[in-house]
Amino acid sequence: MRHLINILDFSVEELDELIKVADDIIANPVKYQDACNHKILGTLFFEPSTRTRLSFESAMLSLGGQVLGFSEANSSSAAKGESVSDTAAVVSGYCDIIAMRHPKEGAPLVASAHSHVPVINAGDGGHYHPTQTLADLLTIHHEKGGFEGLTVGLCGDLKFGRTVHSLIEALSRYKGVKFVLISPEELKLPSFVKDEYIKEKNIPYEQSTSLDDVMPQLDVLYMTRVQKERFFNEEDYLRLKDSYILTTDKMKLAKDDMIVMHPLPRVNEISVAVDEDPRASYFRQTLYGKYMRMALILKLLNITV
Image 1 (tube, one colour):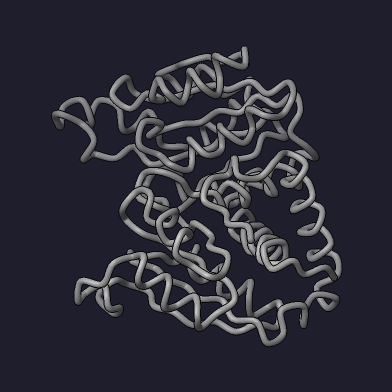
Image 2: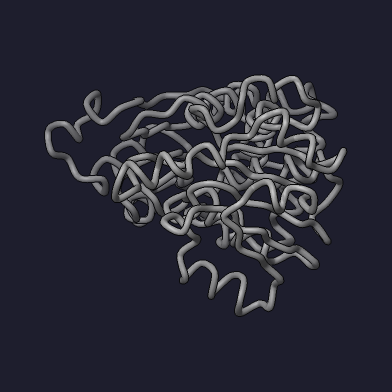
């Protein structure tokens, strides 16, 4: 029995196989519409989620399966003090696979140790979000044709952004990737991520506080929100926040085939006017996430179509 807690739980070959299956799902949806007939997905979401939870539910329903679960801790026995391990042990008796989001780092790992069915980490605090990374990988695969030789800019909150950390971990295993790290000093990429996944692998990288300066060299721009609550004083936030708002003027500095990604939700870091630009991939990215979750469910349930 396999679980997915961290993106590194899967080899590059396994990630490529998931992408291959997702491609086939996109091309031949009818072929997969009954693949999970009589299978049940349990969604244990202890904190709010829109895209991830609904994407998992849509994925299972599109495979012909069914869904049960809860969308907030207050509607589960956690409100009565039940432990994660007990919840997982009980719910795993009612379903065939579990997708779990929890505000505490490590909670899905604990659940996997007590579950009788595969557990998918749908986000645990500031730790991991592997299925968002799967969505990101399929987006880049479709929009750019592959991963090798890309210059990937990551912009905004690189210190606390779990999606950024997971994407760096995944892309660091492909040849010829270069990272451009764009953030205020206060929100730089943590040393442990940079040392383990960039420096130790001798991956070229550049750090910048200016989005405008590096925009012309990027093949992929991955935007995240600069969070006011992360700054020690409001003056620093006000000084920096507008530097990381992507506008149509900034897009004029970019390559004609650069793509813009965002894990969503966005607040004001991408102007709505950018939505009309064909290089804006973030809404397509959410749909790619559904297809990758479909492929992941099939893999963990050992279903071949």
